[in-house]
Length: 522
Image 1 (cartoon, helix red, strand yellow):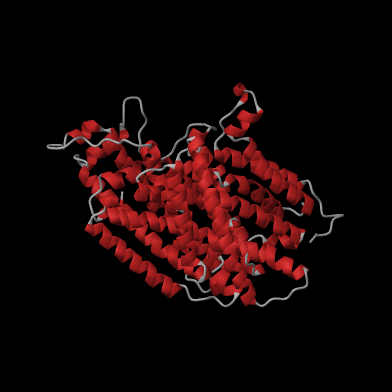
Image 2 (image 1 turned 180 degrees about the vertical axis):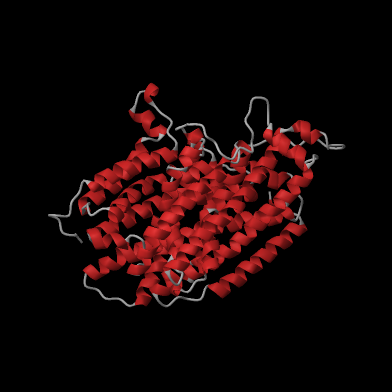
């Protein structure tokens, strides 16, 4: 497949390689303290942090999942940002001020004050478990693109090889500089992949031989009996996986999903904690949500244009004079990559390819430092202190780098597993990336709601709520139901409703505990 790249594409690759080397040298200045390594010394600019949060929340999931959503569906995914704005308001009012007030490294340190060190450790472990699922899924999607570039297919061995390659490059690029390196890297990668998306839209739009008005009309009437692909608000009541982007799901499950993502997921929250104070941190997550909308729209538009390009031969034939009408001869999961590798002009193909690599690196880097910070600050450091061992900050920075390597290996293994998982369930990429987060978020949401808004709960009820919060969504998966229930009882439940049910049950379980006769345990 590399033979399809022209000299112009190679020049783009060389330029990007030089930028990576230069930025790596500039940003990878060794951190000497955990405050610097994990929190950037609380000196990061609000705008830089906002773009980093944007890149973390989008990355490969949007680069491939966005076009996939536009090609298969419509604009309803954009409406999920309504839930994001509600969630950000909650996080800015109730969570971020507490994080800064207590001067914590991780969001799970708040639980230590109420329920003891063990509760903090268990919440951190649940985050790690869930983040391996979520970041592993995103790494898998990035590996699909890289496998298409390197091998021209998405066979298992190709995707696994691409996963190992991305994991190694991402680890080497970020292991020394800490969170500051990752944040600046995220900004660089975001600029690259947004530029690539704009270039693809321009090329695709110019390749479709109709006016803008005719294009809009074609999207509004994609085929007889089919609804408009420009639908933004879906008011249908549908609790299945096909209805996860309707307005009722947006105002319930997506609000919870975003509260967890922005306020309880160390992957996002760690970036917010690098700002100088709570006010700047709150502004950063608000601006990131504002910026997500146009970025998300760009990638969905690519999918809409690809739908016209490949699924409306009547339109494309009107502009063909000496060549065949474009046809798609692959799996829907690779629609965007198929276009990039077979149709897109030289030069632009190189830009899109580095955009995919940039999204892939952003995907991987976003999880490495945050997961390492939880491993060190919530698990390893307290363990050393219980043993009576005193270490300086340099020791924990070194341990953080080792932890990052362990985390990278775990993410790589999970990405390989996701290949078989997603292929087996045939779930659209965007839904797959979002749904795997539910397993850890349900329990964490229940525990934090009890912690913030009641005086109930105990160390045991926290543990039980975290475990049940994981098990409830697992039991609602179709493949689990097929193992445990008769075929006629198997029910398709959308991941947002799984999150609602799991959070409600874990909240009730956590509320059932009382600290009256139980001291916080270590």
